[in-house]
Length: 165
Image (tube, rainbow, N blue to C red; front, side, top):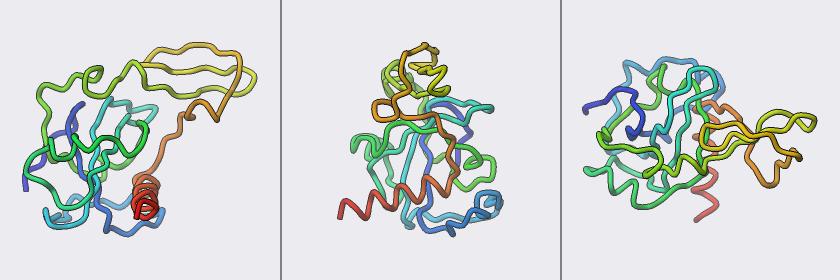
């Protein structure tokens, strides 16, 4: 199986069959030979951010690795964009499709991606990469900026899949 480099727009797979303990986030999977017939979820790298966690989106498609990335993308998103750390450095998640013409605004609606920052005394929003001061810290209206581990996101995906059955 051919893997691609960590690059904005590239599509990656998320193995849904690996151990899911907290210690599994720091284990290296670089020598693991993944097969296309296993059960995977898939996502796209929207933005590389070494300090605040890479920004990703997770698609609804789960199952074997398809031959065409459009089979993944056309089913839409499972979650709003999220931040992740450790998934790519430890090779737990790998890039399986390259997206040469990726445009984060056109393909991921970047200017609409919003996260709540700060606290109730100094609330801010990050909208499309820009910081804006707001009057109220509202966790019901906006998603907080949380950096997830790979196992956190894998658990969220499995829970979403089982709740949709």
